[in-house]
Amino acid sequence: MGLLDRKTAVITGGNSGIGFATAQRFIVEGAARVFISGRRQPELDAAVKELGPRAVAVRGDVGVAADLDRLYTEVGAAGTGLDIVVANAGFTRVARLGDITDDDLDALLTTNVKGVVYTVQKALPLLNEGASVILIGSTTADRGRAGMSIYAASKAAVRSLARGWANELADRNIRVNVVVAGSTATPGSDTLAAQTNPGVSVDEFRAGRVADIPLGRFADPVEIANAAVFLASDLSSFVTGSTVTADGGFNQV
Image (cartoon, rainbow, N blue to C red; front, side):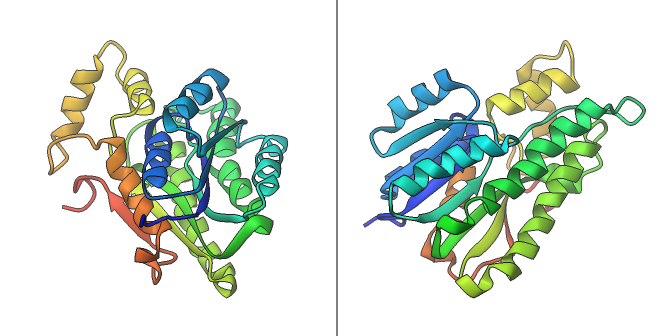
């Protein structure tokens, strides 16, 4: 028996990184069907090929309402309702004060805040009693890193949304929590390395970050996914409005 037997899940940004690792873990734990979304069809196709027949890919951008409608139309057609939503899709961009543009604000806030809001709101009619909603946060929300203020604000908003929604959905026994992810070896972190340190290799970037992580390494995406499995399962049946932080101690000690 798996921890998620017969569950139906949606994972946005499920074609790579933390989202893909979470889809893999959900399937291993017995999820009957895992819907993944992402913006790039070739990556979605490759992800489904690796994940197997219990995975369903729906191309779309969480910042586009019509794309989310299409995703949830497919979920609804399955006829099982929805037990787990993982609002994982996120966007990182360096934007320093004095150089912040409308494009920076629109890109970061549309994906990281608006996208999270509508990912959850549009799922509401499908959510089964006792469902679990998991938002993916970041340690950056609590750090004053140069060039990351707008991204950090967007992830701080995610934490606030979880608190409010935990209250609003309690009468349906729907739990809402956040996985706060630390530095993780994903394509997104590699992109951030190139943005923040032009001319510095990914290995050099990671070495600099590792110096501040007590466990002395970046997380493997599956280690963040394991936290999502906990929050998705009955192991966390009395946990809502809370955070599970997987950061190697970066923000803790």
